[in-house]
Length: 164
Image 1: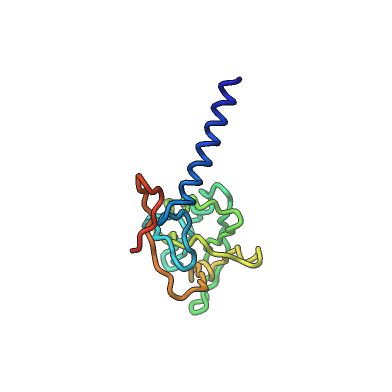
Image 2: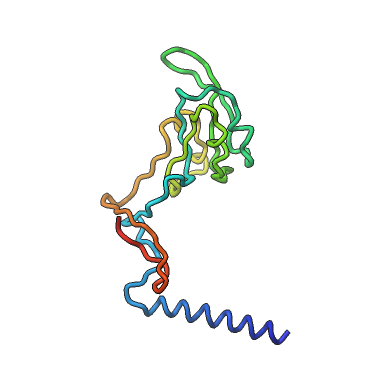
């Protein structure tokens, strides 16, 4: 019991000293200056979905494999040909960004974008019907001159952001 108390005390002291080290160390920062700086994401990053409706074969595998039940198939009518087909719609209130829908799609109609930081004013905007899913997610950054940075772990300084 006493050993556990001493261990917890040591852990908390060590955490506070780590925080103080970053507070008083020049040139070391933990946070990213968003939206002036954007983190460069890897190619296989699982962001919001985009649909290529010309490749979609309406098989429904994406909605069947979704563990959160975020995808559903709805009827969609093409304006030029008047053809009616089923296409997926996404409810981002339920989506866990697992990427199973993209992995199982036989025609590769669904793709993941790098957008993960979209903000919405109304919850209903989190529901992407077919037309919005085809155009893909868009975010409006308040800063026009955003630069990309890459995060690296330095042995001495910890997390370091480097300009790309």
